[in-house]
Amino acid sequence: MKNPKKSANAEKQKRFREKQKSLGKKMVRGYVTPAAMENYKEIVAKTGWTDSDVLSNSLRITFAAYKNGQIRLLNQWLTEQDQKKRALIVKQAKEAESSGSEGNDSPKE
Image 1 (cartoon, rainbow, N blue to C red):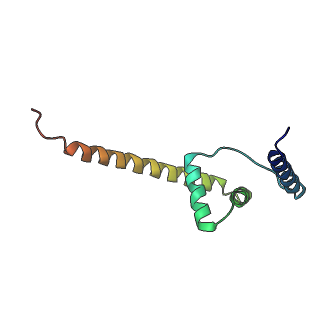
Image 2 (cartoon, rainbow, N blue to C red; image 1 turned 135 degrees about the horizontal axis):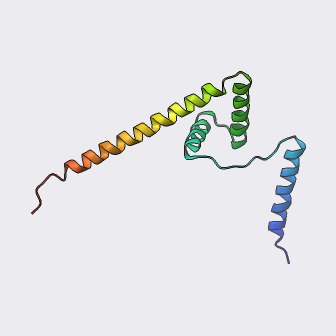
Image 3 (cartoon, helix red, strand yellow; image 1 turned 120 degrees about the vertical axis):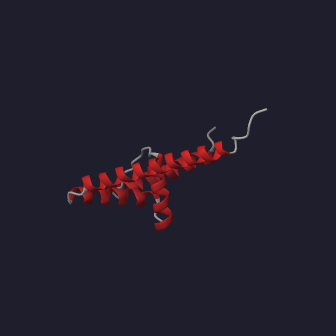
């Protein structure tokens, strides 16, 4: 015998998906990079947007940049930001390494 709770939940989910589809919405799924996830968290914290809002607005903003010939500029900015983050991480690692080795200067017995 089927569990009535599971069946009811599946029906509820099915109705929700059908309603969204009838409203012209499409489910989009994918995986994001750690850098993109950081951006996502900051956007949600500052705007209070839902997952759907973030994705919809991101696509619309990207499309607007494309239509206005700004994609190259946006990609360049993203590349520069990634390089700055990598340089900062390397700098912090070197500083941590040098501060960690300073305490190991005592002579060995």
